[in-house]
Image (cartoon, rainbow, N blue to C red; front, side, top):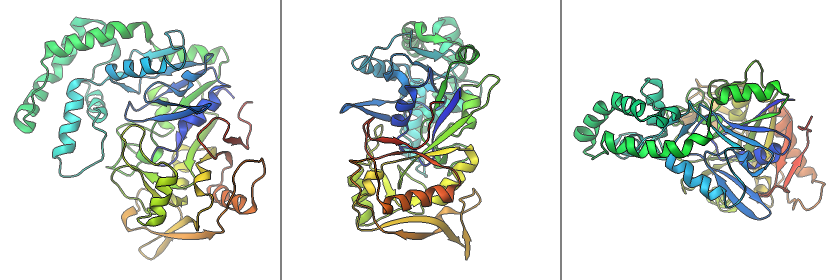
Amino acid sequence: MQTMAIIGAQWGDEGKGKITDLLAEKCDLVVRYQGGHNAGHTIWVNGQKTVLHVIPSGVLHPHCLSVIGHGVVLEPENFFTELNRIKKVTKVSPDNLKLSSSATVITSYHKLLDAAREDQGPEKIGTTGKGIGPAYEDKVSRRGIKVKDLLDKDTLVRRLSSGYAEKAILFKHLYQIDIPSIDEEVERLYNHGQNLKEYVVDTFSLIDEKLAQGKRVLFEGAQGILLDIDYGTYPYVTSSSTTASGIYTGAGIPGRKLEETIGVAKAYTTRVGEGPFPTELIDEMGALIQQKGSEIGATTGRKRRCGWIDIPLLKYAVKCSQLTSIALTKLDILSNLSELKACYAYEVNGKVVDCAYPGINLYGAKPLYKDFTPFTDDFDGKSTSKEFDAYVSFIQENLGIPVGIYAYGPDRNQVVFRQDYSK
């Protein structure tokens, strides 16, 4: 197996970083293919916490080459802040970290525009305000700044000027916000470019070369399938392709196909920000799960909404990203609860629906639950209780794919591989 992907199967925050970190040990490249620093992957190693935002999770393995693909949007200042912090934990250099020359750059204008829209718009999307959406907008409208543009000042002036006049009018007359001049922004970004250039390569040809050499490549997604710009719960989504299709557009698998696509899902469901959430628990149980699971965003610091596991949404995730197996995380949080439920279907307009297809109004979906005998496993030994096995088996049977991994804590040694991904 040469190609594998780790993708969030819910609304993000599923524990992808830890799974990627473990599987990266058997891989040669870890490639981040979409999103920006609006996502956070938390990894615990020997009790030490490391939070990554845009640098791939493979960076903690010295043998692994970490690659930031062209589908990522990069804020240079944030990149260096994260890089300097990671260098205190592990060795990072241009030898083991590469950045696509075609990745889109987040400018000061993007961050200001993102924050202004969220503060003044009639509909709150729940954006992190980090400029991700506006940067993708400029990319699609062919006004984006690429990493390679930061390496030449004349090119940077020309590229920035193409969209500056429009933005200046928006900020002055609509949002009443002062913005940096072209000269100020050019100087800032060009200086960053001089520090970035030793990391910059054509990552598409790099991946092509490594695959031709027989190297193993692991693609790491940010956020989750249900936040995908096309497949997610629009408009409460991110601005990139978080599904497996984003790998082909945001990094490329030259002449290949994905051989294994692992969907990471919590043993319950969480969501940050606005949007529909059929199984949300707005009661003491929801508060308890939130407290036990420390459900606070690594990037935003916002509390996550919590609810029972949602099989219809996971079925949809399996279908739209062709998931081949599931990694089930945070199983320990459900241990010793007074009750345990799983949503196996919805009632929508008097009909039972077992897959959350996009045409369904999730606000009007009434979850139908199966009750389970709560398990009390402490996960100290290798064996599990019949109650625990019943819960995991129900999820596996309803999704039609195996639960190949389950995790019961934050550290590397709190993961059980039920399927061999090393071959």
